Length: 249
Image 1 (cartoon, rainbow, N blue to C red):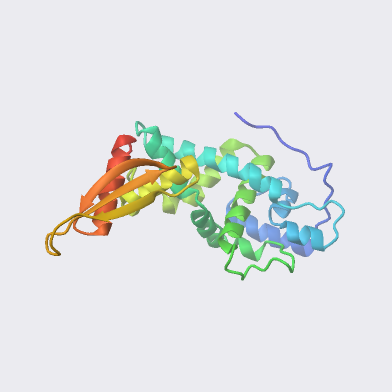
Image 2: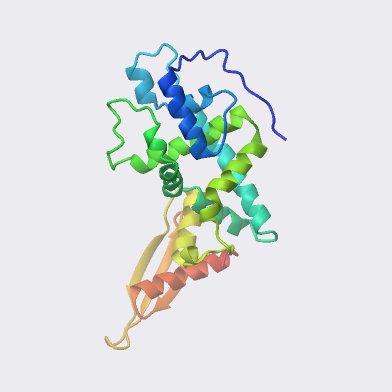
């Protein structure tokens, strides 16, 4: 069990009373009371703000984001393992990827209204759509990293279970994921950080009897073929074959 407590002594922080009150409001939203509220302050400090304010320490949330990403993946993986005992590793891995993707974490960040407590520099505006999802997701990861350093993994697991409860599926493959192209996309992104590539070809025949043939490649290798009455159907069949070969469907 990871229970080590970390000290903030080498990172002196001055937090005024108004900021402390704001952070206490956030603690209520998050559902966790910090022993050292400086961790929360750091989690809610973007590097653009730290550098623009000429802070000598340049303290920001980047390292907490890095740590939080790792801890969050472990916590969500553990949660899914407990929820779906006996389910194949590949399915659990894809489901975890779906839950911790940037857009999902950005939604959690919005639920907690983290953007209202995040200190941003003038050079980094929250209202910029480009990069907003990533910024919100990174802030949530920093929050998880801060909670971990202030407490332990068991506490993080409780918080993660609380935050993710509304989004947890009742089945290993929820309806919104039960699409072969979606599943293959998650697998490919997780494994190779690349999207599957589809190629569609017309089969000979009249317009009425025309069929389409599709192939799907992952990381440059053809993994599946499919046929259908239209391009969409052919691509889905190709994705199904690829998933079957990977023992994921």
